[in-house]
Image (cartoon, rainbow, N blue to C red; front, side, top):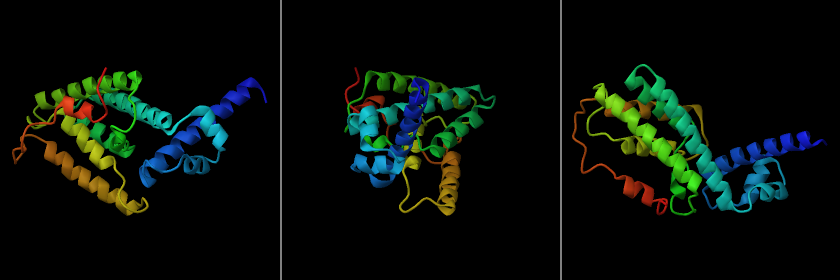
Length: 208
């Protein structure tokens, strides 16, 4: 096999591993053995360990990829002409690919500098998106960007049992209810203070 062919095969195997790892971790829990990931991806353990020496490295890569995709969705949302539709589209997109599904690993893995940088980029964009919707009078005044992120995280968690059309329908129905709850002016005052960035980042560790 040529060098280019080997590189293409390695890239395919990496994609298979990442897709398998995300599915295994979010359905079987983060204690699932890496052998289950290799088996689902259809690759040998040697291929897995050549790319990711530890489970932590694999989880770090999955988290980074999720954050990078969130940044892409946020940039698209900020380009939407309607502030509310931009915000609602961001929430729906992130729930659709379950961007917050890896939230439960917070505090169990080391956070790389690249993860922190990407997270802060996403935070800045999310704050702009939320401020734009609030300034347009579409978003209730007491909702913060972190509230929205935590809402996405809640909807990203898998429901019990195998995924199905009915479960997806229920998730979309509940998401529509939740999005209406974000709209201005808001019928019920939110209890207590908004979650802080210090608390949120502290779940993952001490930022550099």
